Image (cartoon, rainbow, N blue to C red; front, side, top):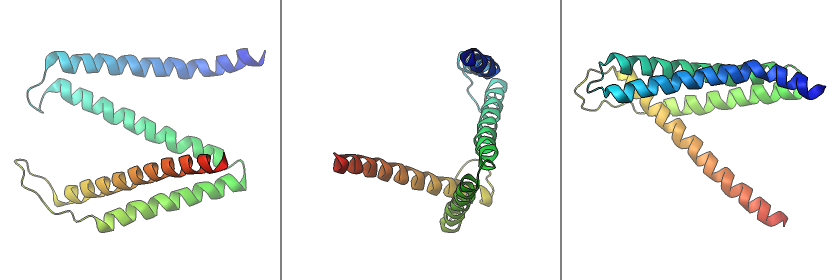
Length: 146
């Protein structure tokens, strides 16, 4: 009986997932069959807005689920606060280290955009380094335990 209730609870999520996937495939097909030659193409704009919407949805879900789970115990709430502070420190440090020096482009770009791009690159470098170090640490720890 419990399995059928779990399946019923998961059904709306599966339907939403299927709808998002189908819309993504349709927009992907439209963009690549139209083969836009400039960045001003209407099909490309629709595709980019869809990507922005999906990224926003992913961020909201990623932030909301741990937030709801954090209020179940003090330990989870403390872990969430520590995680948020860690993210603020990493992003703030990357912002302070980012030079934001302008480069030659044909388009007009605000100075703040260069600073933002450098910050995103530094955060990405940091996250990749942490992921690689985690893989090495995990493999070393597993080898030591055996």
